Image (cartoon, rainbow, N blue to C red; front, side, top):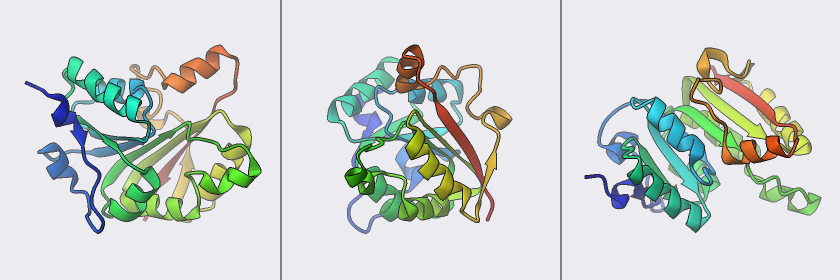
Length: 203
């Protein structure tokens, strides 16, 4: 019987590195979603690809707990959720070449200029993320904030180990089960434009 305690995992301690195989109790492709919100994408991705091991990171406690409960109700065994600072986790606790896909959808844009330093996607985060992605791994990023997207495109597009590829290539971002994130569904109804980019890692 799947329990909520099976889905919710504690963040690593200082100096500790995550072991994906130990986290799930079995080997398999390891994907990370940062900021899963209500968990719609995480649930759909996990159900459509049971061979994939998905770790979701979320800081909002109510979403963290409700998402874990949602996975239990759907009997989804290939998801783990963690309440943690995503930047710290990626920079300090992920081993090299462990991720097959990194999903970053609608990160907080911190629109006021004085708050830009709080944005997730900065140079140090990009370097750590690339280190954690395996050769051939994908980084999918999506936002409705045009100015933030320009910053993201400059950072990722200028990295020597990242090559931009079409969104939806090889099914990434366009699988039949792709129903969009909660933010995406909401913003499209409001008529907002969604900006998307996909990159593949070459080391």
